[in-house]
Image (cartoon, rainbow, N blue to C red):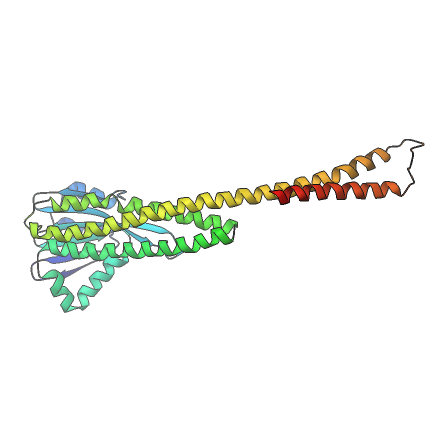
Length: 301
């Protein structure tokens, strides 16, 4: 499905969840390089930029939280930028881009603000809005980190370990998404196109600041999560040692009664004290002494 929005100096074409029929429209309306269409048909793992004579082609990764559970996912946003057009293409729906197009369609003021200048300025506004959602993802991960930290120190359950593992994956994946895109912004700044004039450099530097902020906070969260992993492993190891210690105490306590009853339970005639109640008392006394000795040793630790 594609829609278009006309501004003062250019037209914004937006293809949301591109289908095969949309490629025919792109081929008829624009003269893009065939390799660009190959990138549109495939899932591009890392962000990239190709600079041509009359346009630039970008593929960026936009992070988001999926609707089921707390899991960071990414979607590819492909952008063609020329002197009199901007084309945005997504294989999967990207809420931030669709929302921005809907806002520009409804609001004359917003459309005048972002579409009355060059396509380079519009590219800055679009990326600024799209990467703003990355900060939302980062805040959610920071909140989850605080909750998991409390669970690690208060509860040592399988659920805690599972949430900790999921949080670790999300933090690392967010950094994997965001870090390489700073290089793409550098290439935009150095593209030297008429629609990307030098006075726009400060705007794209602002986007780099956003990406740097996400990277720094993400690195801090990564360090915190790694520390929580170590603490959680220490607690689990301590609990395992406690369980083994208790089982050892039970085993040692039961050893004297087992030995005594095994000896006197042999099918041997004329065993002394076989009917004496003192044997039962001896078993109880030895068990209590063994239990007391182990309790004293545990208390010293």
